[in-house]
Amino acid sequence: MEINEQQIMEIIGAAGTSKALAFSALAKVREHDYEGARQALKEAKEADLAAHNAQTQVISQALAGGADAATADLLMVHAQDHYMTSQLARDLIEELVKIFEARDAE
Image (cartoon, rainbow, N blue to C red):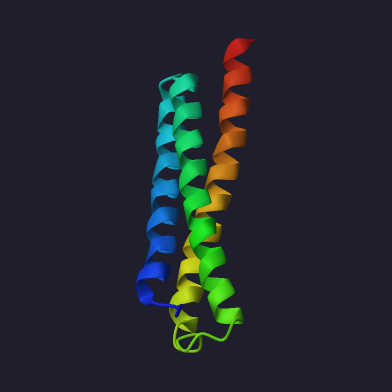
């Protein structure tokens, strides 16, 4: 199977969904809705997993020498940037939820 732009766009789309859900969780913290925040983060993690699975497929195909491996490089870098940013946002917001929830519990 060859690498195609659609597969790489799946990474970008899933990463964007994850990042949006993570920031939605942060907005829920402002309302002291910690259960809603945790649910949004759970959904963000699922979107990250979808991005990870698509990324693994693209990388595997590139390593196998797919015909489009060289032409997909720039788009893949862009996708990786989105994916890594979404993971960072989710991880950071997970910690912020814990901090604010603990503060409100005092």
